[in-house]
Image (cartoon, rainbow, N blue to C red; front, side):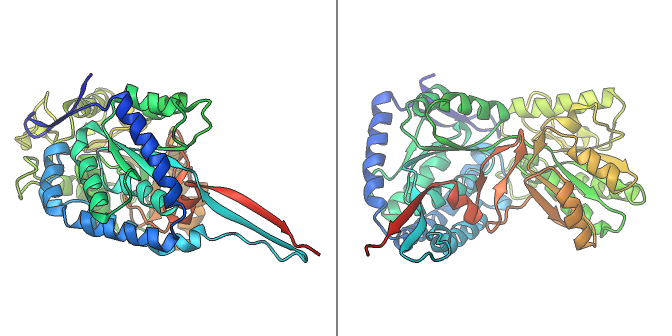
Length: 461
């Protein structure tokens, strides 16, 4: 492959084509980044933060261009806008907490000594960003990495080539030093070559489990640190005391927003038997109201999946579940745009499901949700934890203390109560099991992008 190509899920048109950067281009980018980082590390944290606010302002100024570009590239309806509200929240929070997060840790005083642990930059950070939230996922690492004094090389997904270019444009407008941030056009082989070269000190990757394993193999022996956010199969548990209408509204949105292509989207729901029938009816009603169609149309509330192959995976999971006895509550024929062999896929609600079905165990990353009836907390916990993944879980209840107690037993990186499909920039974003390793956001996110350096200074007598 010599070119990176973005094919629109709307109609198969070619949105963008870019030649892959050759070894000389990559080597020059690494050299420029390495040089720029040494000077950038001498700049104060406060000044670096101000540059990130300038970057944010420039990116916000591009939003009216970004919104239709996202629809063309990955199918998100224009009515939902870009991702700039979330980007703004995260960047501003990151800037606000940076000085505290990067401040030296000073142990208790010891007479005759000065002791501290400083947070020092890693050097050059490689960010491999996904297509599903191409700006939000990218800034989660790019911004704290730069504020921490690192240089950043970005490899964006082929499906969202233009997102990488907009990030570069905003960085250039903000006046970052030459070479400190560079958007590269790399395929899988070129990315692996860059990692194997040992030129980068930290790699952050958001993508599939298979992709994460490939990154780990490429990084083996380089001693680069890794941040991996991989697959998920996020569960929700609706307890008997839940606000039913509120749970229905939010879990339907959590399952179907962005055509289900959310890292922490809801893919399976366990509902107390006393609420089960009403919950199913409510989610089916909510799903039936989605308008599947061209994401450039203001009336569309459910766009195509980003590629036909992803839609076919969900269709296969659904068909397998039905063959094993699951009940499909929505007729795809009610959604005129839904056609086999295309990325246009109607929402689907499945009941009579169990964990022998791939739709309840394997990542779907599409607009389908399976719902199971449970007798109580213990059964719900067992089923939520019966998964190779562990990104988030949500518990719907009026009892905060009980939600926390249940959350202590859930095997995920994040536990929600009465909300889902959301990242709070004040909290660490992390996963367990096959969902990956490392952490982003919050003060902890800064720590993964720096190295501790201890100072043990004995005063002269």
